[in-house]
Picture 1: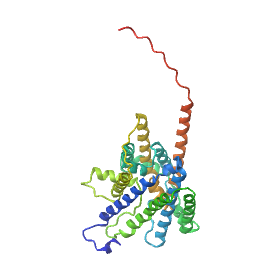
Picture 2: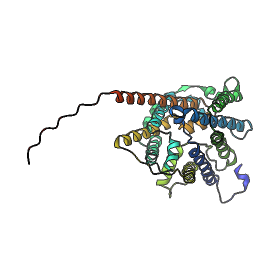
Picture 3: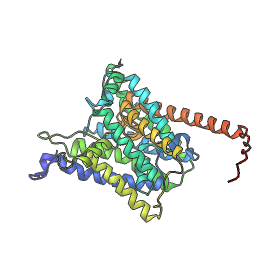
Picture 4: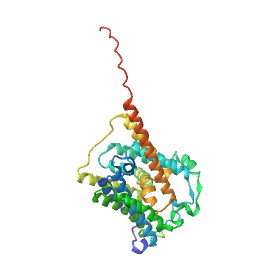
Length: 361
């Protein structure tokens, strides 16, 4: 469709950067205001409210995306999340690792990106480590390990998409969206919070249609993309390092927009505050969590947005498995940390050693 606009000096790729910048800006604003985070929805103290916002975003993303497919604007034929051979081991292992990491860092990578724009130096360090590890897993020293784990696949054929199962896309879309809507309505959230979740969910089909239909140029095609933070984070890192040699794309635009939107929201709401680590042990915990999310996110096929919110909107079985694995990994890690904390609180205090007498000077 893009070629019909008559642009001669601007390519679809260049426009996609501006489009992604706008998407990221809106996401950053809304995510900061609603505290949008999958970890909170799984193990947060206010998980009922957080799950309601997240569930509404999921319902809107699925209905909007599959409505766009029904209109003939986009299709997911050949998309990686609908591959006929399911990399089962990679998705499950990567999802559990990502879920564990998001508990250790107290936020999924999208939430940490938003927090890093509000003065949270813990989140900023995690974002940097995540990007480095994810890039190393995609194209660096960890790539052979990724390839090895991803080699264990299960052939699904057409069943890789729920749309190919009995009932078709409409039935399965409703099977996902209706329970999500029910959860959102019972979450006791304020209307503004639910509206924020719905708007975040609407960004998913907007991105799919924008990159896959409006900006589609058969002479110079670009990838059809939506909200995600794993691959875009690695692209953003590579662009920052080698901007003079690598043109910007959708990923760097999305990351820049998310940071900018979160910063604007934090400043307007007077929530910007410098924060850092309390001790070396906490620093190590956050670094480990970020590394686990970086490696696990690539194995699982994306983060809670890429493989979760946007991924499930494709009706891909891989995306459902990835988000389930992330949730189970996060829940298990949270329970383990709780048990350790409880055991430490009931442990008897170590006896005080009697200091040895010091010789006179």
